[in-house]
Image (cartoon, rainbow, N blue to C red):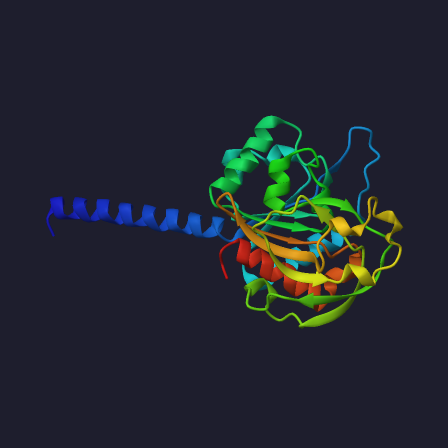
Length: 260
């Protein structure tokens, strides 16, 4: 083997090694989500769910089972273009009120979605960033109100979507029934329920007729370049260990990551 041939081989080996390393880094990025849990109001009076720890624990378990990494934060400083590049989905798990504290953070979020990033919103995430229409559009709607917690029947109306894999066609559930407005016309309901069967509807100011029936409680969409899914269920912390909600969140995350 000549010296020049050895040099060429060395260069080729180095190049191949770099390609493998970069491919590994990209693959790693595709297997990682950011779980974001910020609850903030300037006066400190915003409601903070006690289910956050349970939801985070469930998503960590999903990551261990399905082979994706899970980072968790409630610090809006994580929203920079450089940092968000490592994630293939953002999971707003029971976040509420002000999700971002600066315009550059909001801009980084927008660019992430426009770049094809995935988004999953769970329960009170629909109450995040209530004064920013772009966030409502990403999530698919904006929280309006819920009556007193109660039992209701939920129907799976999109069993063909991968997020609904393994879900029963119909099941009974006890939760806060979320009424959501500013619904995107392009969203696709997964779970719905008949709002006319509910009690304590006096909490819905202006009446329930302003909301569609059946009322969507989980949906998917593709908006502004990203994959988005929202699940209104999940107020009670013990629900995150139940197969129905666990499966829906897990499948939703995998779909948002473009892995299903």
